[in-house]
Image (cartoon, rainbow, N blue to C red; front, top):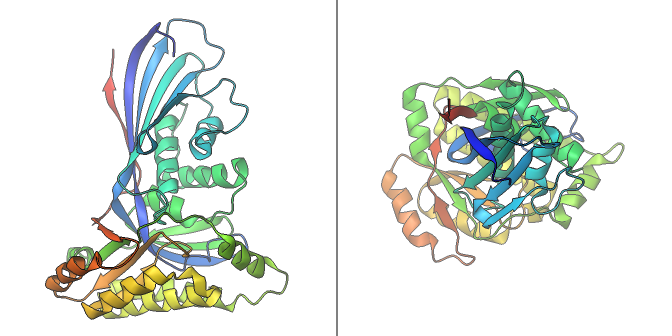
Length: 354
């Protein structure tokens, strides 16, 4: 980055991650139509952008990425011809029409381990795009930010990608998503009483299963099966009903019924492919059942690694006792502290220099 620059402003943006995605797999192009209920939680993905005004004439903006979780700090080549170290982040920068006469340094951080299956990549994308959006004319609404983040993954990177993670990060709260024609959807945040909200927050637990999740041969096989002409997609309808069942249970304040919807969803994931619920996840579920768990949901698409959402009964001591025994399971799973996030994407100018 050129030394001939003056700090103009500092932009901050934060976006929550996603857990307990009932109806996941139905928010995809091969499902065509789907229904998902998911829950936005902190810790959030955080982006901070230092914006410098250059005193030189620049053909392209100068951009430095500082990816704190990976201890990577590097300048993007201009023009950006290919995506190299962190393709998702680089593609987010590439899709935005940034002013030419500025230099920026982007710091990105998340407290959640990479590959946690909690939509962290989508949260980072939404936060980064929201921050960069403040440098362009106009301002994108939450739905527009979510769809732009989805386009980054599908169009820029050519990845298989559902829509629920981006929408959850953009909207926050407990999202009821009805995808009427991929990738278009309506998003209805659930309006719950404080009593239900607080009790749900107290009962939930996020358990990281000790290793990063990555798309595997299992996922490819599931997708190949579902995308075939005339494929039996009845299990996707079961997953949709789990989302509907979960929504109704939360509106009723019925945590036992909500736990049943979580369990049914996990069993439907196993029907898609047995290996979508790993042996480590099964061990954690078996232990949680001994300590009053009434619901469990393998987060995201499932498979090896990743994380699990647990729902416990009314006795807080059961959660604490479970935590004391959790370390005895192989792969070293650990609980990640979470809080329900009422808000989705937030962005603001932290510091503005006159």
